[in-house]
Length: 235
Figure 1 (cartoon, rainbow, N blue to C red):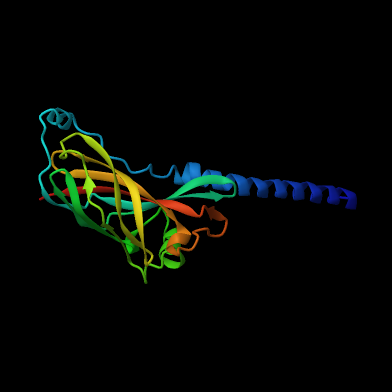
Figure 2: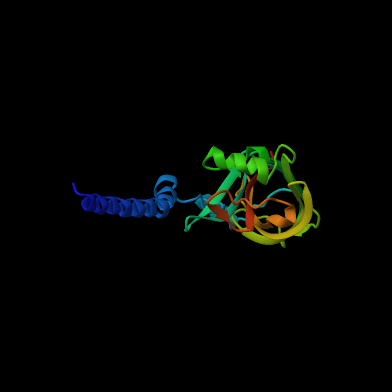
């Protein structure tokens, strides 16, 4: 093989290598997000009411007064938009380790307090969980997040089975050692056995002294949401 032929072969393989690297960089994240990892979990919403619940709504079955406590089916988590090598994705982490309760008196929610164990929040891979618990949320120093209702919530009417109600809530949220007043919308429904409540709270990281979650090639926005779906029982 002549020197000129060897140069042509070297150039051809160099071009193939560059093209292959480009495909790996652009196609790899697409393959990971859309094929290997799959779509992120959808936003938390109320469960679909049963036919019996819809029928009981017409009978005016209402939730009783008193303290309603969080059950083990409740979920709290985060949702953040991120970009990896041009591919858009949503980072979602969740936990079911939640305690707390609400107090209902007639048509009013008079009290509500919740505590979330931030050390148990998990995503789809441990490496990202290590970042979340380490430099981002520093859970060894700030292991919990809490919310306390400060203004009573007027429901307008007693919680009736099968009827969905959307209201605003105002309270004090403590996250990453910072406490701020937040106001957000929440939606609830009495199912006949539980009160289910869902909603989300916008979180701008700088407001809570939280480090931007961007890590290596994964770049995130400077904000996200704290989302929740709470099942409450009076048993």
